[in-house]
Length: 375
Ligand code: FNR
Image (cartoon, rainbow, N blue to C red):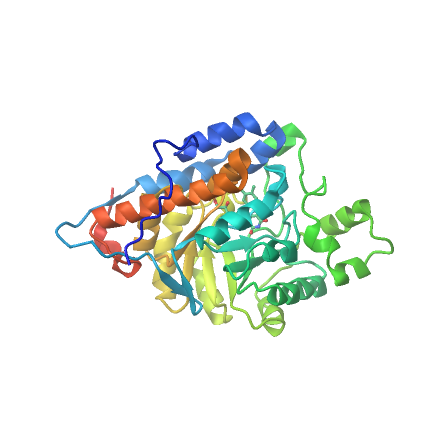
């Protein structure tokens, strides 16, 4: 099956076509507080920059004369057939970027068959988001609560609402040091944008004498950061769900080893888009050593800095089974809602298809180290 995604002629579409143009347009349309919250990284934003620089240190060495008439980008993850190796990363509080928030994103993801990972701090509840997605693939991202029965409850709800994997984010046991947000005096969590999954949760609500927005925000801020999180907590999560469990935010190969030892089902190599440890290794630079440890035993995903089709090819050739994008789709959402997210996805998948074909690959399985060189 040859995949050509473009439904609109990009030369006549009035929407941006490059990440840089989407970002520029989003900056014009979104107030400084929420824009900087989305765009920014931690401390000096070195890792934010490294995530991009890492991709330019690898070059594709294309293969020719390979008959690429019939192509497919399909992959299988956790026994689920997916049309493409691209997913939408968990991004909380999407209403700060667009009034329709996650609902617009979810509709675009479902229409494209691109899996969506829904954040614990989404601005619509996981059930509301599931409702607009039909049977389309979706995973749930968990921020571990210091009140672990709240975590268990959310995981239960995710299972009931048709989410097919749990992504435990392990790099956000406290908030990264984000200078732009200090400068703007901006905290979307404090403003109540991330409450939907909490105030719809029976266990969370049972902890409050009275459920008011103010009480809920205070309780969320009290329980969302979990510096005590450790490998033993995986066992508790395992007891509470039959779904595959992925850990998101792994950068060290020894942690990948521990993830395997603790029976984790998947790993997402990520530095949270440069928003947590500044000075941290870029995701792409971290990937090869982790791929060496994982050796294909469990799915290995990557995010942070993926912007173009060639970027996806490089990450997959270095050992990732799939990639996730964060800011690119958020800018699409900010600029044009559902249509913007759809356009960002469509452009990326077309770039991926063209890049694969012109490099001599007809399937994702074709992509390996032999078509890359380190500059
Ligand atoms: C995030 N990210 C994130 N991750 C997570 O596990 N839960 C969350 O709620 C959020 N929220 C969030 C908000 C915003 C505004 C951004 C930009 C990012 C991190 C996200 O899942 C992903 O790791 C990065 O966005 C990937 O990097 P790029 O593609 O943005 O460079």
